[in-house]
Length: 250
Image (cartoon, rainbow, N blue to C red):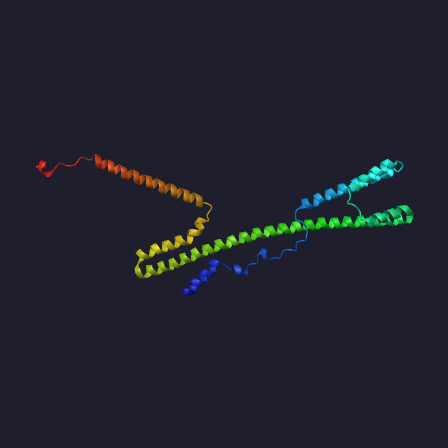
């Protein structure tokens, strides 16, 4: 009998230890980048606006090179969109302008193109890291939801197993009682064991609310009927005349 109970317990709990779930798969490393795309997009728009305004001012300077006042005004306007340059860079630019060597200008232009290309590549890399960070963050959120569902499922399964094992134990006791003491005592225990084993499935049934509502309604109706029947009996008893005494009947 004990061996049968152990086998039944294993069959009820299942072989969950040998199942491989998706939650066992490792998550990829999340890049050190913001997960919200608004942060990168907003900063990128501001930087693009700054670059466009400075570049436009420089184009205006080139087209109005014969107008000193316009050149000065546009230069100051372009500088307003940029942080103050270090003194060493200012001195280097002034020396370059004083020398006015076309070779130096060509070298600096090549350096500027390479620097702009490197900055654009770095920015594209940042956007890719941000997209990957967002993807991994969403995976983590989905994993948390899966784990919460799994914990809830394990909790429900453990609760069902407890009720089921209690019902099995009570049913075994009822079977033994029926065999040795008679069905009058054993059959109610068997019925209680069956009800105890089915309890968690009934509670988790989608029709549980309807069952509870109908049960409460039936109980309320029964209570009303008992009260009405009791009141009717009291009225009928008060309306019945008392029989005359025995000496008056003689």
